[in-house]
Image (cartoon, rainbow, N blue to C red; front, side, top):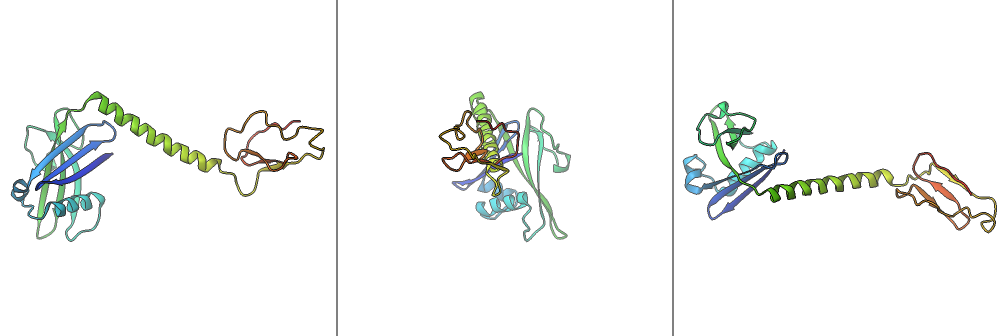
Length: 199
C-alpha cells in the first residue's frame, strides 16, 4: 500500500513515504540532534535498519512493532489517539513501538504531506499501468506456452501438391496455439479450444 525511502544525508535522516493508491507523498527530515532528543542515539543507518526491520516483521533484540497513523499536522497527540485513515491536512506518522518489561516507548516520525504536480501523479499512474500490463503479459505467455503433450495432431494423407493442407489463412493469436511440423502439413493443436480445420 505504501512505498518507503530512507536516506542518510549529511547527518540527517530523510524518510519519504508514498501511497500507491492515492499517490500522496509525505516526507520528513530528522537531524542528528532531533534524533538524539527522541532518545535515538544510534547511527542513522542503525535507526533506518530498526525501522525497516520492524516494518518487515523481522525479529530483533527487542520486540518492535510498526504502524502508520495520521493526525492533524498542527496537533500533537499520543500515538494511541491517532487515526488509521487519512484526512485532508493530516501528517503521516511512522510509529515504531517497543514493548518490553524493561522498556516501553513509541518513536514517532512525523512526515508532512508534499504538494505534487498533476503531471507527476499522472506519470505515477501510467507507470503502475505499465507494470500491471507487463505482469499480465508474463502470465499470458505462461498460459500460452505449448504443452509437452499436444491436444490434437492432424495429418494429411493426400500429397501436399494435391491439397494445400499446410496453408495458414488466419495466424494464431497465441504462441503454441497451432503449429505445423513438416512440409506435408502435420498440424499440432497446442492449446485446448474450438478449431475449424479445412482444406
